[in-house]
Image (cartoon, rainbow, N blue to C red; front, side, top):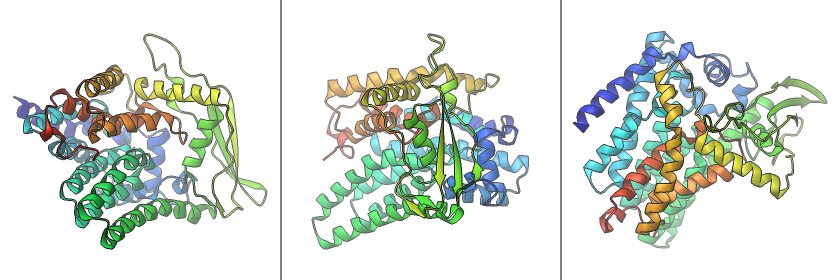
Amino acid sequence: MLPILIVVGTIFRFCYPFFSHPLDHLGSDPLRHYLNATTSFNSTIFSWLDPPFPQLWLREILLLFTKTRLSVSIYFGLLCAALPWCWYLWGRQIFSSEKKALIYLAALVFLPSWIGIYGFFMDETLLLPALGLTLWLSWKAREHNTAKYLLLAVFAWAITLSIKLSALLELVIIVPWLFSHFLKHNGYKLRSYIVLLASMLMLSLTYFAYVFWVYQGLGSTWLYPPGTGVLTRAFYLSGAQSVSAAFVKKGRPFVNTGDFYSNAMVTESLNPFSDWTTWRKGSYHLIINCDKKVVLTEDMPHLSWQKRMLLIGESALYFFFSRSWPDDRVGDIIHIAQIETRWLWSLLTIFIVGLAWQKKRFTDMVVLLCLGSALLYVICDSSTIEGRYRKPWEGIALAAFIYLFNASGAKDNKLNGLV
């Protein structure tokens, strides 16, 4: 019965973008990503502020698929259908039985928030399968502990990081784990350190490629965070409900972003239990001097620890309870399902903590990745949180729950141990 459900679900996933077409949903961020890929690179300020890899990828895909409605549907349909199978490969590595991996696959096939996003031109459509494959290669590297597999896993992390820098929150947990096991297995030798140095160089070049991309477009750049990150970090730390930025050269503004805000702040995340939206008020205006060639970071608002704790609390509420956007249209049954099932994630976290406590499994890497990345998303001050940022974590949380539910002995811990 389970294989039949998986096949039917996979077919449905492929068909979904034909009925909820990305070209019918061009507005706000989806429109920005579409224009980044279909117009010249200097047409808007965001073509230089957004990461280059998704723009170049989508540009080539649209050229290959000729930008017709049918070809766009086929591309998004293939991505949507393949997504759960990318994570299933990871499931085969972390679960002790094929049955658990199939249960995991079935859960992902029918996960509403992993279907509805494929009706939009969003970076998450590429990030999600890339992260699944990256986790699979990471566990393969942990299994084999060879230079070839480690470098392959790090290369996958570099690709995933180039799609969306938020993948850094998973990377900082997994990559040090891989490095420590590689050294433990291969010894503290010169060859081992050369492999680790090559790995770190690959990741550093990926990060600084984004920094250089911004410099190429604006003649100015920031080391932390690069690109749009400087806007979103200022937005987060300002405590304001909206933000705008003026880019200035020789004392004159040459472009202004206009006010923008997070969808989570205008949506009742706790509805129907509360009409609360945000504690934030007002607007914050950031002036960016592009006469400075390289800046460590723009001057950011300084907050008291009480205000920071308030913002962290707000981020936790958004992370666990905010509906994902833009896949939250009330006329789409998949979007409605995504909105209604968002309550699952806070409950699942409680169950994961309880099971990990009962079975003494907090140091198993699947559990550590789940709880650790959730904590990093909540406390990170580089961006305001939305339900959309939860999407990659949802696959990790489901894996951690299934892993813990029947975790019994050493076999379950073969590749998941911290040491």
